[in-house]
Image (cartoon, rainbow, N blue to C red; front, side, top):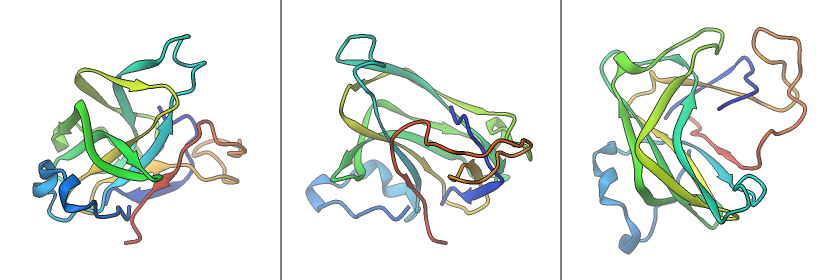
Length: 170
């Protein structure tokens, strides 16, 4: 879930390093050279309920706009040297058609990506959530430090979770 949302919108279209040929994920051949949006995260041992990890069942994303025909793919991936990696975790991919993407001008309505089976992530290991589409028409809400939340008066003063947002420059 995104807990702090500001007036910033970004295209879902991050400079992602090209993995070596032997690590290339062939499942992204149909991405059409997409420039995905990615958010890294790490599960702390405290959040793993005393275990070695936890299961991710779904991800909520807040869209401001969507394309009328092209879908948005959400993936859970590994992270390599601090950058989104090429390996998709088992059961870590969900595709939503535009009819299933909720949009909101106030970031009030989430689009929930539910994985076909719970995806296991280990504590103290970095992963990323990657949104991929082949158009610039899909736009998601993001928050930035120091800016005011959309529709509110609170300022985003601290990062609710550790991680890095990778987004394209286009």
